[in-house]
Image (spheres, rainbow, N blue to C red):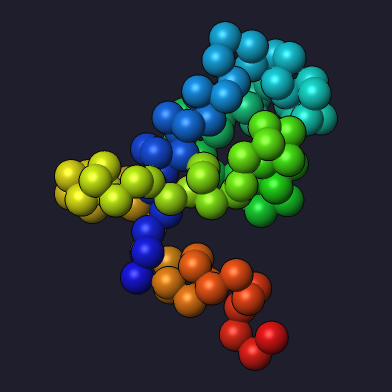
Length: 96
């Protein structure tokens, strides 16, 4: 199993948003409230995450998966289990 690190997601999103949440929201067609929700720990829907990834030039996985060293010390708090076959296979799910 691989995990989605919610604290890792918010840390990385804060890194790319920097001090410009209003401009970030405008550029992506999001409400400022939505951006603040994401900065405070809410993981966006896949479509929104895809837009964020395209805008920043980073893969979606960069936002969702914490580095191994950091994940090992997280102690499981704020992490959601995800089957490795979905997270790492690149096949887009079973039966494709």
